[in-house]
Figure 1 (tube, rainbow, N blue to C red):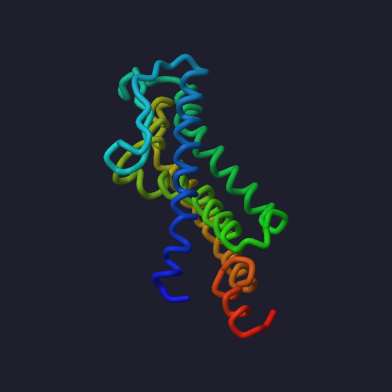
Figure 2: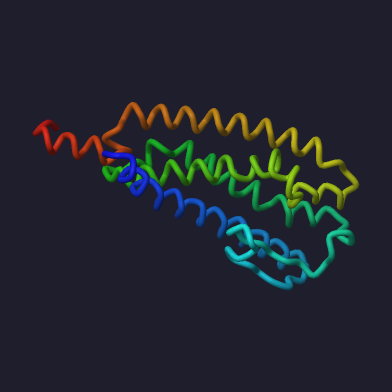
Length: 187
């Protein structure tokens, strides 16, 4: 399978995994804020200028005080990462005979395990964001960033292991191996 076809094969599942992660993450922000009595001014789905989503709270950032802001800000990252661990731990059980479904499972695991730790550890240095909820408790965000970096390193290691498993079973993850069997009469 040439590079263009491979890209077209893997782009849709990765895009869907990113959208799923984004929708779940931002919905958890919204639900946590609503359940804890915080007013929402706006829910921007995929239109905040970066192609991602954002929940706009009524309380200005400099007036946010209290542990409930940790739940609102960090809850989505904790839950999406937990979903990633569930995917990883059940990856063999959930594999199908459809390589595209299995590739989608891998990309979903990648986004759910790595995106939020990457944001907390690295991107927050450029954009701020959820990690700064620590300020509402009077804490520095640096220990949180370092902890997230450790989680990110561990989760990248898990995804590399999963990728090695996928490469060892190309017939389960890549349509190219199935095409090869059909063309050559093997399998």
